[in-house]
Length: 494
Image (cartoon, helix red, strand yellow):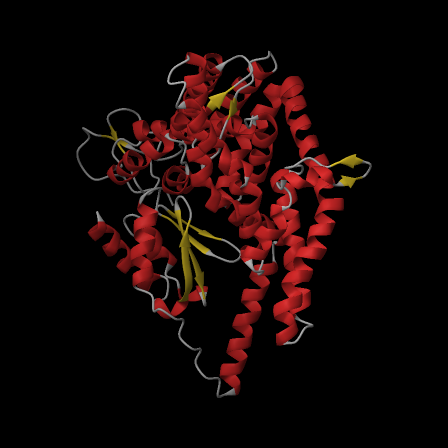
C-alpha cells in the first residue's frame, strides 16, 4: 500500500514541475492541493493520464489533483518527503530580460489570484472549517449512539459519558474556528482562538448588548469567525505601527481588548440574528417549498463539488446543528451523490467494451456510495460530458423526494457533517423519529439512483456510448458495427 503511494508521489512530482516548483503541499478528503511557483511547468495531459489520478482542478491559489479518499493522505505524506525541507532561494535576477520575465510571471499569478474574489473568499472560509470535519464526524456519531442508548434504556451508566464526549467539542467549537480563521487569514492562531473564546464563555451572560443579556454561544461559529477576522485585522494594524518592544506587549493586548469588546457589544448580537434567520429560513423553505428547494439543492450541488466550493457550506451546516441539533440541508445535498452513482452505473452498463472506464467506475463506485463523489465526477461523468448533467438530474429528483416529505412533517436532518450517501444513516435525525428519517432518506437515495441511471442510459451517452448490445464501441466517435461483422470498419464520411 505504501509502496504504491510512494510510486504515485514520485510519478506526480516531475509532472508538476519538480520539487523546485512546489511551494507547499496539503490535502483535503480527496485532493492533493499544491501551491506552485509556475503553473506553465505542469504537464497536465500526462498528469491526467497517470494511473491513480482521477482529475485535476485549477483553483485561484492552488493546483488540485484528485486522488480519492484514503489514497490522498498516503500520497501526500510520500509527496512531502520528496520536497526539500526549505524552499530554494529564487534565482538571481541579473538581466533586463530575466527581470521582465519575473515581472510578467508575478503579474499573471496576481491576475489569476484576484480574477474571482468571491470564489477565493469562499475557498478560504472553507479552509477554516475543513480541518474540523473529523471531530464533527466523530462527535456526531457518538451523539447518535448516546441518543439511541438513551431511547432504548440501555447502559444508563455509560450514556452520560458518551453525551459529554459528543457535546464537549461542539461547546468549544468557536475556539477552534477562531484559531483556524486567524491562521488562514495571516494572524496569530492563538490570538484568534482567544478572541473567539469569548463567544462561548459563560460569563457573557452578565453582559448586556442592545438592551438584553447575552447568551453563551450566541452567534455560534458565525460570531467566532467574525471575531477572529476582526482580531486578525487589529493585530496586523498594530504590528505595522509598534516597534519591537512595544509590539510584544501592546499588540496582543489591544487585539484581545478591541476585538473582544466589539465582539461582545456588536458581533455576538449581529451573528446571533443571522444564525437565527438562517435556521428560520431553512425551516420555512422546507415546510413551504420543500420539493422545489430539494430539487434545486440536489441538482446544483455537483457543480459546487466540481468547483471545490461545497465546503463553504460548512458554516451553514454547523450553525443549524448548533441551533436545531441537526442540519436539514445535508440530506438534500447528499442526493447529488446518489444521482452521480446512478449515472456511473448506467455508463458502466452501456460502455461494456471500454475496459479502462469500467475499471475506473469499479474503483470509484464504493466511495460514491459513501457520498464521496469527486472520484466519479473527475474520473467518469465530467470527462464524458452529458453524464454529469444527467447525474445532476438524478440529484434533483432525490432532493425533491426528500423535500416533499419535509413539507408533510417528515423532515430529515443530520446530526453531524462529513459523511454522506449510506454513511449518513447513523447520523440521521428528524421530528418524526429516526425510523421515518431513515426511510425517507433511503427513498431519496433510491430515487436519485434510479433517475440518474435512467437519464444517463437514455440521454446521457451519445455517439460511441449509445451502442446496442453486441456492438463494438468505436473510441473515435464513428458509428458502431456489430461484433460479429468481420473486416475493417468503414471510413467516416468526410
